[in-house]
Image (cartoon, rainbow, N blue to C red; front, side, top):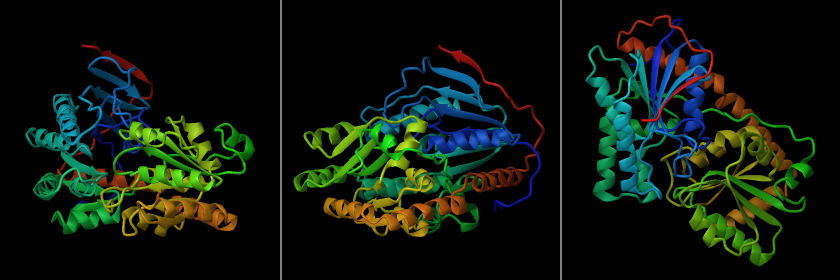
Length: 438
């Protein structure tokens, strides 16, 4: 059993294996980056074996050249390995990507870690990393950090069904059971891996994702809205992040069409990128009350959230328990109320109810979404109360320091399970880069 509250005092040599990392700003990357840098700040020697930036655009960032890049960034040894990127992504394309990254990752130096942390997704490359660790003499402790549930994901998105979905769940269970410890990001994830994947509860630790975006004060709200082309007399409903299948953003396009037909004072703004963006833009051709905006830099992103009237989480019908939208932690910190268009039994709906930061409206019902946004924006007192509740929830439940504390305890407990003796090591304090362009 891994006790996340076990005492610790010594430094560990930690290697993290995960396909997503900064400068990606959406999805898992901000959390992996925060974790690596926070552990390094606390004195640990941290290596991250990661991919080339590609998400959510699903194409390689052209500023990252060659097949490998090794550098030190903010105290973390970052080892980037180029891998296949499917464009557009498909089930087979994602399998190829995970195998491609896994092959590069297992052939990389891991620098004799005391503990390995694998971030999943990607499950197949996680399994490959597990296989390498198991074949290593005097093997290190190894834990898996579960951000999405694969079996539920393929079923809920319709990527696989029947035997294919069942086989994915069996693979997921087999891989997770082989780790020394499992960290999941939500209590409902823990319930699933225990009840559906038959993993003993004592082997599962819940460590919540945290808010990684600091709130911003806006002195001139009208000016802030004007920089995005938003007028003072329209309700701005802002959705940020990935534009993929599970977001089901055709619901938002249809809500904007209804708003056009009824000439309602509302604007839906979709900020981000993803494999469904082009299709959504095509479906929204000629619709006045919807805008598509490419990903914003940090300051503009925080300003947009604070200047909007409503923040939107939208999920496709049938998405219930596969993931916890990463955008929620940013939304909670903004002080802006949230509308969640999602299944009323979903993990997302649970989070909205637990936080008290927003309202839930059924998934796939554009008229309901439109009505919920207008009603919320038309009730300033309720909006203020919901926004304040989000900020409070941020502090009490999804604070970064608390989550990193739990993670550090978990990592030390993993090391103890394998009988690893932490050692004092030198930790880099400057940024230095060596690029391999073979």
